[in-house]
Amino acid sequence: MPRETRRRSYDQYCAAARALDAVGDRWTLLVVRELLAGPRRYTDLHADLPGVSTDVLASRLKDMERDGLATRRRLPPPSAAYVYELTERGRGLLPVLTALAGWGAPALAERRPTDAVRAHWFAIPLLRALQARGRAGVVEVRLDEGVFHLRLGDAETSPYGDGPADAPDVCLTLDAETCVEIGSGDLTVEEGVRAGRIKAEGDAALVGVPGA
Image (cartoon, rainbow, N blue to C red; front, side, top):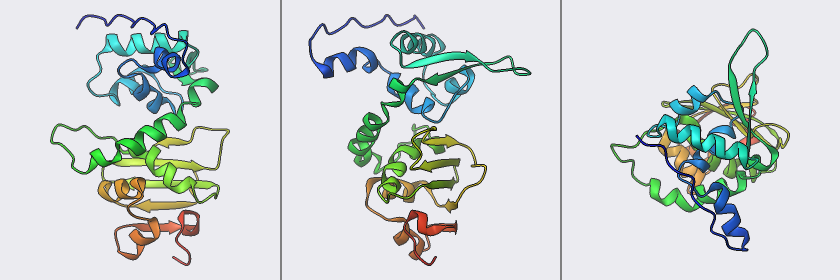
């Protein structure tokens, strides 16, 4: 597949146009979604972005480095791998992705047979729903599709991560459909627990389930 060329600037003195100059290319915001989970190796990014070619991914990462959204660094010994991670400006795109996820949530009413899925793709809408409670803590979320965790009220680290948490305050076991409903605001965790759709272990009050 031929390498995609860099899109020209819109050349408009407009904040939205300037933003789209940096992140308007196909795949860029999805790369940001992956890096919001923390530093990632190129091979891990490629695995969790099904459908992107190696040339396009490499091009997007170079563009993001040039635009000050991401950096590339080598891990200390004994690892010889390089990882990509977001800069402070790149992490500032979390509210953008949160708003996009909220706007796009109705389109998840039905999963298409061709849809790929990764558990941590549910993190952003779920984070929005649980952050509203104002509590700080770590929530581990277990789906059939995999495990991820959320860091509520912690602005100093990545807001979520792929895989289990080291020391979660509460663990939620549920299915993807229930996760979508919580993220869209159609269901609360408390309602899901009461209905038997969610199993909550630990400090369930963190996610709005008093006396669970």
